[in-house]
Length: 148
Image (cartoon, rainbow, N blue to C red):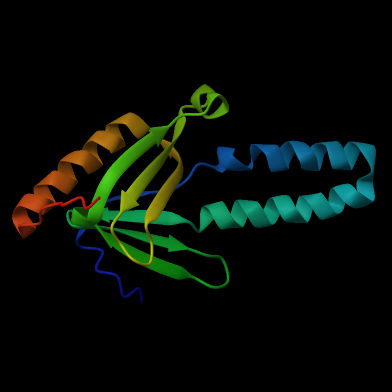
């Protein structure tokens, strides 16, 4: 039984398998040019598919929980009031298939940057995190101070 409180989860997101497109092309080229190497590349491609398949973000009203791993599973939780900056990056190839990278810069000691890679509709998710962060800061009474 999963110990996460999934009742709090308002949204679950996953990276797109489009992240594996380069591995797919490499596998096809390997199979055509030199089949024994192509078989090895096929195993690498299948592993990458599993890595993406078992990677997800559970987003609740107060935190983001990242669950990642095929054999060994790593679960990391970041509270939304800790988000200091949100950076949306849309590389050209990602834009062709409607994907984005969303960097969440946080004050978390163990995870200063959380990357949501290969997500759909990055612009609206950026706005959602911005609003949820501000709401959580008000509710928790958290204020940000910069020391220089």
